Image (cartoon, rainbow, N blue to C red):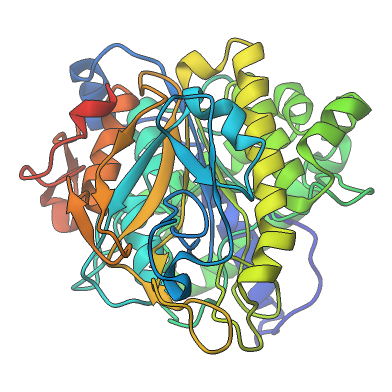
Length: 456
């Protein structure tokens, strides 16, 4: 969350606080600069399609066997406690813990053969699923939503890419999570809400009235210039100073924008609609995602959780501080089932699903065999993700895991292929080259990677 009036934090010898500097610098997270010449050229080369995307990131890694790839014929210690149920698409079954989703299988497809061979830690999965690549050699690749914002820019006065409710935090690996713009630059980072929309007192404090903005703006800009001028005499001649001013102006333009305020005004939704999504953090975040897309935001990332510690999540190791399969089914699954189903149905009823990709994915699956604590551990060998909307067909199953849910049996799919599929769905050439580190050309997806044709 951007703030411009913080008065606490580490204070340097000149009186300038670390928090002050970070708050001003974080304007770059708005992703509000104009597209560069290269970006405009890329858009001209891409297919003329204006498709949005909502990415629901299921932090913790859902168990594929207990959710969307049930194994009713496997031994008890593998198949788990849940039975499969039929969906509204003939031949597709999912776990009984998702009765609402079962009514909307025509609106999404299941990819049951996603896998990766990197280390089985959360952070690497976060990177690969949101960027299509594993970070190495100090290179941080951009989130798909940041690439879309870079190439197509923003619509009107709303950011191109918004991340809600908060970024992914500590998940045990101390590595980047792939939720920013990486080598594209901080100016293409997503706008981060950093607030819980299920809070009865939810508001966006940084969307301030113009009179307050003017006073704080003058004060902070003066303080910033004084601090930087003292450190770098040639600041005003530096191109970064000009960019900072542009970002500052654009940031305040957003904060005083009626369009942005309207997009975030959850209180204007009817009570029945808010109840339909569920009055949970995830449920209200999904509703807010719909409002943002409806009002011009191109890409919304929704993190279902921000950590896997001290909270009941998809990370079902069984032993504390984690939960087991039973608690996941009691608390996490119903929250997802309700919000995801409401989102698909709402988008469909409003005519938005035809130009909005909705994908729900975790960073890996879980081990087929239930452990002694009644949970399942990390397993990137195979898992299931959901995708549909826009040009991506629903009611399909891509790939298959083996009889024990241990590895892909047919049509193995990598995170890079998932990213390439989303890029194609957004009307972008997956092999278009971005200016990478040291201006080295970097394709959105490696030339050896192709989108999943079966979904189009």
